[in-house]
Image (tube, rainbow, N blue to C red):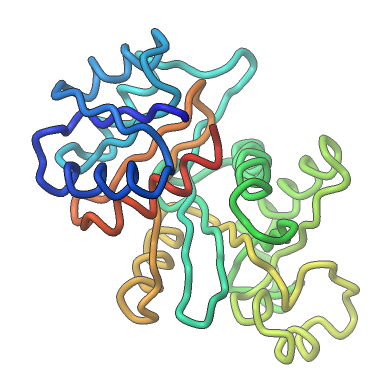
Length: 257
C-alpha cells in the first residue's frame, strides 16, 4: 500500500481522516509532526510516495516547499494545480488552475493543459474532454487578447499531443450543457462542447471563483488543490478543510501515485 505523508500530524482533523483512509485501504497514512519544508525533504528522500499538507499552511508555503525541496522533473517549466468537483447529480468535473499560476502565458497555459490532462485521465471515470473557458464562444465576444491566448495554447497542445480532446474558447454553459452547446456551436464541429468534464480557466481569479462557487452554491464536494508538475504528487489542502475533505482529496491524490 502506498504511503502518504501528513506533516500536520497533531491536527485532530488529520488524525480522523487518517483513520478513515486506513480503514478504507486508500493508503498507509504517515503522520509525522514537522514543518512542510521538512516533510517535503522527506518525500524527496523516499519516505513516502506523496504528501498532503496545507491545513495550517498557506498555498504559497506548500508550493514553495515543493519547488525548493521536492523539485520538478527535468524539462518541466510550469507547475499548476487542479480541483476535483463531484456534484450532487453524480457528475465529476476537474477545474484548473484556481490556485497556482496567476495569469499564464499561452505557453504556460499549454503546459497546464497537458499536466491536467495526464492527471484527469487517472481521476475521471471517462476520457478527459477539455474546454478552455472564456466570456466568448468561438468568436462571439469579438477580438480580445485572452481569446488569442487560448487559441495559441490550443495550437501548442495539439502540436505536442494531437490526440487530446480539447476545444475553445467557449462559455461555461456551452462547455457543459448539450442543448446550449447545440445552439451556440452550430457552425463549429466541436468534440468537446456540451460534454466537457475538464474546465480550464483563463487565470487564477476565474479558477478560484469557479471552484468556490461550485462548493458554496452548488453543494459540490471538492478535492484539492492537487499540485501538478512536481516530482511527487502533493495536495495543498484548503485551510477550511474538514476531515471529509481531507479524505476525498487524499483519495484523488492516491490515483496519481
